[in-house]
Amino acid sequence: MENKSPLDNKKIFISITITDDKEIQSLNKDYRQKDYATDVLSFNINETSEDGTFYLGDVVVNKEQAARQAGEFGNTIEEEISELTAHGIMHLLGIHHDGDDH
Image 1 (cartoon, rainbow, N blue to C red):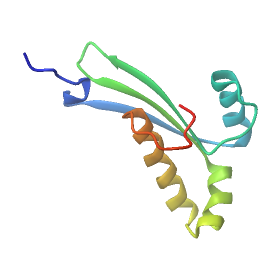
Image 2 (cartoon, rainbow, N blue to C red):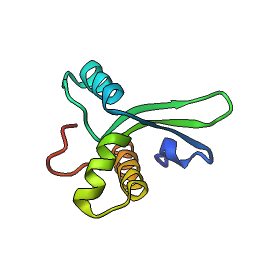
Image 3 (tube, one colour):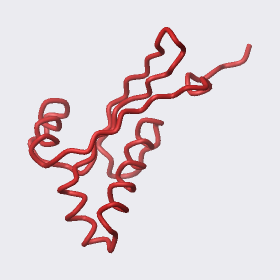
């Protein structure tokens, strides 16, 4: 018998929200018990709806932190938001790296 992943579905939904320091700090405190602003948060949902769409999860990107990091890393703010979004999606897919607090 073949093991099928929910990601084998044809329709996969990911919610991406771009927010600010205040909102992401509140989410970080509520869900991770860390009372500070961060650059990106990921929340796995992993539910299949009646129409077969798989809701992988939510990615929340802090545009204010992205602006600060863009200068530090030599990116535009758009590039930094893109990098953070990709980073968040990788977390939803179970890909982590040293130093991640998952």
